Length: 208
Image 1: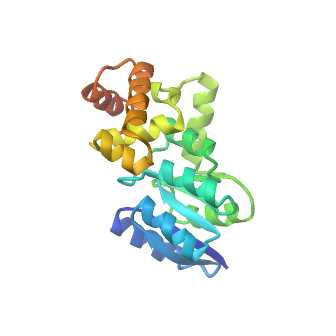
Image 2: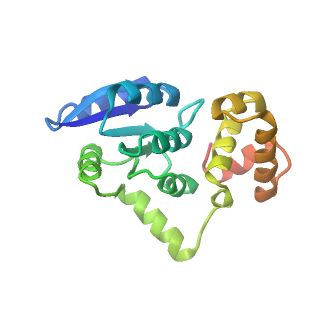
C-alpha cells in the first residue's frame, strides 16, 4: 500500500483528489493538509511514502515546503501539482528534488499513474510540462524569472501574495534584513524597481 499525504489549500480540489486516489486499491491517503506548515507537521506524525504538494499555497508555498521536506525527510518522494505547466516553477521544483511534477490540467487517471511511477523510483512529469521544458531547452527560451534562485522565487511569490517583509521573514525563518537583501537581488535581476512593477512582470509571465 502506498501511503500518501495530500497538501492543497483549496478544499474542493483537495477533496476531489483525495476521492480519486482512494478509488485505487494500492493507494491510501493517510492525511491531508491545507498549508505547507500543516503538511510539515503531518509528515512527522504520519510518515507517508509520498507527499503530493500544491505549488501555489498561501503562506509557506509549495516550493519552500518541498525544500524543507527534502532536507528533513529525504526518504519521502515528493510530487508537485500546479496550474503552471511552464515557466520557472517546474525547473525550480525539479532542482529542489521533487520526483514528479503534475499539471492540474492532466487527465484524471494521470495522478494515480504518477504516484505509482514515483513510488517505484521513477521521475514523472505531466506530458505538457515535459514538452514545455523540452521546448524551452531547445530554444533556450527562459523567462526572466528563471534567473532567480529557489529562495528568491519563494520571496517573490510571497511578495506577490501581498506579504510584508516581516511576514515573509517569519514564514521563511529569515531576518527582515535578509529578506530585504533578497528583494534587492530580485529587483536587480528582473530589472524592476518596486512591487507594482513586479506584479506587472509576473502577470506578463503568467505567475499571477
